[in-house]
Length: 529
Image 1 (tube, rainbow, N blue to C red):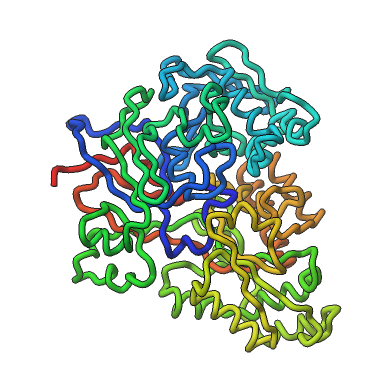
Image 2 (cartoon, rainbow, N blue to C red):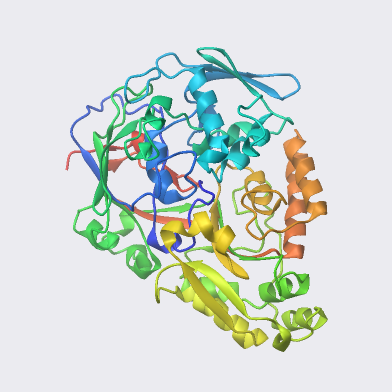
């Protein structure tokens, strides 16, 4: 994700839906009416594509805005506002040809200069984007602007109103994939310059536009009649805030779709029950993990990191506490991701080995370790059972007491890197189906998303090789070597890979959740009910 992080760990059980616009065709016989799609939602932290880095905000941004390209239902890059493009022989220069009928919600026509403005705004230090370096940093001159050394991005040239030329520093295979992320979406300069809170009344290009936003009650999106693709199949989407428990609202027909938490999983898995036929199960390209601050004692010692990884019985936690709703992670790359190695073993549960790791560390004994705290998202006593089991495992197996400190969920992803303790809890959902999105984004030394501050020159060299390699077989082989290096160095404890459990009312048509946790709401339409 979507995404820094597509969403924090707690959202696995709360259930936040993320949606992406599309220009896919609806059934020919569909006659649009006043149908409304009702969903549970939460207040977005922002509706500014350059700032957003979590799914609660993306759920709306990816309906209201759009970019040059998008991912289709098969996670392939396809045209969006750019109807076509050309790539130079050396793989460094892309020439995008824009559609001529694209308009902002206000009616102003979108031109190539709007993309140049949008990307330079994202890279302007004054904007404060925490994602621009990751998703636009390949463009020549972007890093100069991010560093405050330039007022424009030299690698972006407007050839005419409908032609944009973009030059990247090295011919990386995943560049177009990065442009599907919100940071690369186009924004209306006229709207942005109305003031710092312009995004409370955003002027986008997506299939829906913001009609109403009452922060403690609801957010309403309405079909964009000026949309350049096929019009959305529902007239409006209402996201209800703090209106009750989602499952109870679903049972009372107050919402049409809901994710399922582990507290209801037995009920919805019952083949003789009322919900089984409405249940959709989708594996997710995601990783949930505990990160270690590798610059701070005691996790500046590789053996302490390995000990903490080896002292957690993940299989038991997945089976008994999480009710088998996730898949145990032995490595970094999830099943379904190109380069996934099904035979990967990682650092398994081995208490004796964990004790040996501590014994050979510079501390020699668990009694010599400094105080350790783990930073998590949440409020008050809202500590999930799986986290309690992990902390208890460290205490029982290693004799180490770990304190828990919470940050407010709405601010967690924006501040965890600055406010983290010795350990932290995070989830990462793929923005695009390439191992670069996990291994490079999370563990490369200079990555914005390297919250562990982990630095390994050998790993950096592998990731650099993989980035410029054009043959997929060789690329994925290098990424597997990089994954092995990460697990051996243990900057994090991989916990599990996500699976989405969703209930969808029978009258809701064309709702499909893809492995990125994304559903294309513009394709959804409703039967009479």
